[in-house]
Image (tube, rainbow, N blue to C red; front, side, top):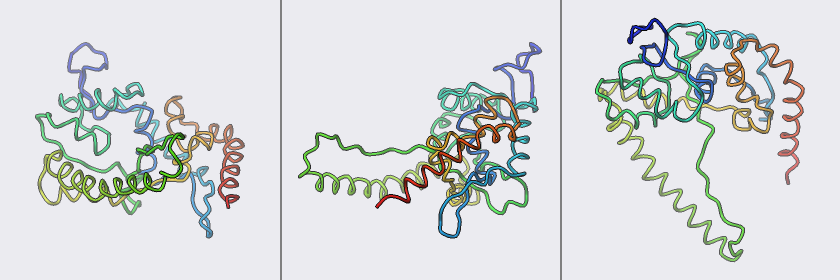
Length: 259
C-alpha cells in the first residue's frame, strides 16, 4: 500500500505507507516474536547456540523484503525520535496503516482522532502455535553509592525492596488494567481487550538477547543485517562465528565458576 499524497512523484516523508520501520530496536521484536532463537537450553539448563539454521536464513530474506522490496515500507533513521515522534506522528496523521511499537506507544496516541486497535507482532507462519512478545532489553535499576555506610546497607536494601514491591502491587496493576485497557486503548470491546492479555501472556526472550553486548552483538544480529542492507546471513555468521563462540564460552565459564 502506497499513495503519493503530495503528488510530487517521489516517495518521501509526506506520503502514505502501509508501515514504517527503522533498523534498530523494532527489528528485535519482529525477529524474536517470529520464533527465531539464537540460543536454546540443554537438559541441564545451559544455553547453547542454535542461530545458524534454515529458518534464520529464510527469515532474514523475508525481513529484507519487508524493509527494502516493498513500496509500502518507509524506512526511517534509527534514532529515538523515530520511535517517539515520527512513526506515531505518521499514524496520527492517517498516513500509516500499521505502526510498529510497544505498549507505551499508546501514550503517544491519546490525541489521535482516528480510532485504532492493538495487535501482536506477526508470527513466522501459520504453523507457529502462539503469538510471542519479546520483553525489551531495557530496565530501570537501583544504585547504592559506594559512600553508603556499610552498617546502613541492610536497612537501605529493606526499604528498596519494600518500594519495589509496592510498585509491583499498585503501580503495575494500575498501568495494566486502567492505563492500558481504559485510557490508551480505543476499543472497549472485551474481545479487543483480551488482545492486551494475549500479548502479555506471550512474553519471551533469549539468553543471547539479554547478554548481547557480551556476545559480540549476536543477540541483535538482525539490526546489523538490516542496517547494512543485506540478507546474506551466511556471510554474517561465517565472519562472526569464531568471536561469538569464544565470547559465549567465556560468559558460560564466568557463571559456572562462581561460588
